[in-house]
Image (tube, rainbow, N blue to C red; front, side):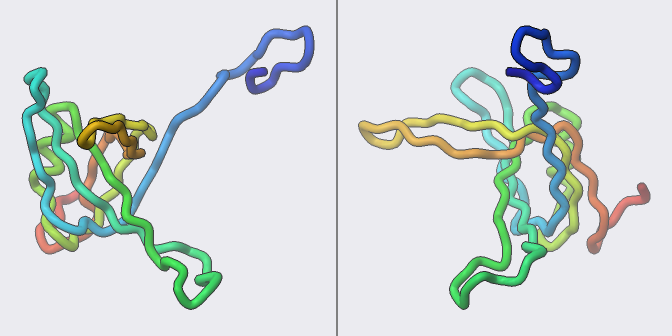
Amino acid sequence: MGVGASKGRKATGPVGINEVVVQGRVSSPGQERTLPSGDAVLALRVVVPRGDPPRTKTSATVDVIDVSCWSAPTRKRAKELAEGDIVLVSGALRRRFFRVGAGVQSRYEVEARTVRRVAGSRAAAP
């Protein structure tokens, strides 16, 4: 059932929400490529520190988030980013499938709607 729905009633609000906001450090310059379809995409990685203390000595203290920039404006902004820049990305979580050898694998990534440098050596005014 959707949000706001109960048995026998229609949902009054959105059935689902897929909004992601990530702020973190760019791990390396984005990689742009052209797909066989002719579409261009720029991929980058954002390192986000975890807010909670590690559960164990070997627990990760950061998450590395894959970000894909499909629109011309987001690709342009992402191309201007340098390693170490702090960036704010908003978008939606997507699951991408791809072939590896004879099998298929998948990966989750944030499909960027907006990309904005927050701080860095070449930080732009907001």
